[in-house]
Length: 128
Image (cartoon, rainbow, N blue to C red; front, side):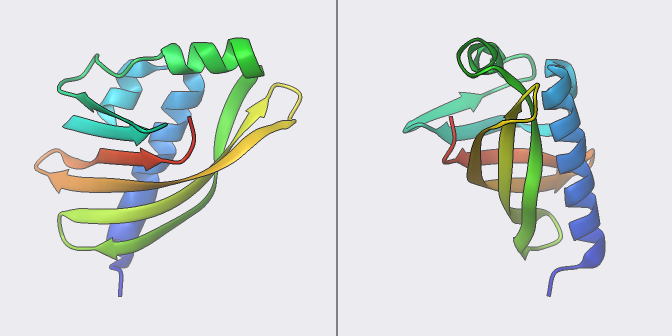
C-alpha cells in the first residue's frame, strides 16, 4: 500500500513541475528536480548534471512546429514507493492555445526524497 502522505507530496511536486513547464520557467522546473537528473525520450538519454542544463528548446520547437500552448496531467499513479523513492506512472496531454489536442503521452517518473524534499530524478517518456 502506498503511503497517502508520500502520494500527496509526489503529486504536489508534479503539479509544481507542470505549472513551471507551462510558464516556461526553467528555474522553477529545476527546483522540482534532483540532480543529476536523467531524461530518456525519443531513443536518447540526456543527463543534466546541475540546474540550468535542462534545455528549453524542446518547448520552443513545440510552439513553432505544433502550436503548443500548454500541457496537463491526465493521470498519475504511484505504482511503487518507499520512504525515499517513488515510481510514478503519468499520462499527459499537450494542447494548442485554442484547446485542440496535439498529443497524449505516457511516462514513468522516478522521484527521490532527500533533505530538501521530493524531486524528480528520472523521466522516461514515450513523448518527444
